[in-house]
Length: 113
Image (cartoon, rainbow, N blue to C red; front, side, top):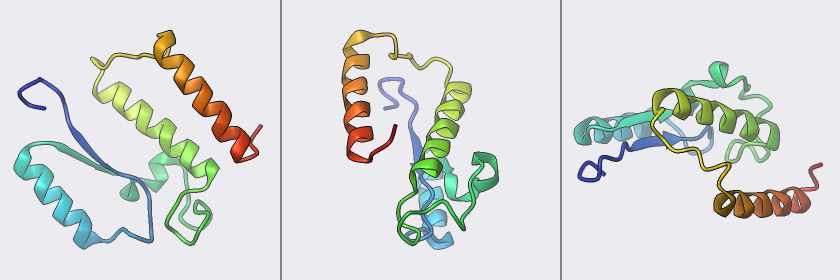
């Protein structure tokens, strides 16, 4: 990534099932050693607007739809603000068509309107 001028970010999505401070510290140490950012969303419930009591669909391993949506919006805004040089491909039909198909299928499978 460094050779290509690409910014790398380690991201940990909220998960009470697999997360702990030992794991956080180990990943932070690796990120520091290689000089990359580590964004651990387990430490950002308030900023994201989710609550540990009601954001999981399976006892803490996977976020429910509402919490996943909020986390995705938070992460997207974070990347947009912190890395403004990233290219937004949403208006590129090559990307948009694939995304739209996946989105329709996801909503159909999960019975989301």
